Length: 174
Image (tube, rainbow, N blue to C red; front, side, top):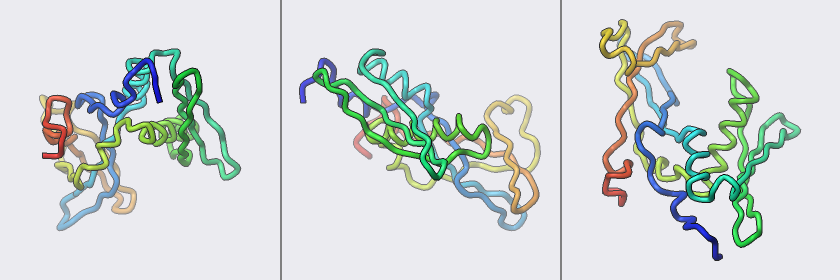
């Protein structure tokens, strides 16, 4: 397929500030919290990557609400005057159901184009967790989480990406 851009550039690694983390699982062991976290690319970073590689006029997205209320997103890229679309879906989220569902569906569809796919190669990552308020000078590095199951809260610190998962890293998994 010929295009006027290098589609492989969609899979380029992102800077750390384009990556966010969320808790996948958490719990308590000997009254100390733990949290396994996942890294993902923000929607803003995905849109910027598509604009940079495909130009703002070379891509588009569309959303469909399915019969089970799942939200599907198709990301289309114009290749040789033909629109090629890749789809994925997500459930509405607990907070801002529609916006969250659309955001999740778009992130999933972007992976089909190679955007952020390398993040699936990260090993299970555990965040540093504390129960007391973090020091004032580090406050912006910590996130508050309330564990409904345990009925108590804790703070967790965003982990650093390994060197290989950054644009300046080796990028071959070493």
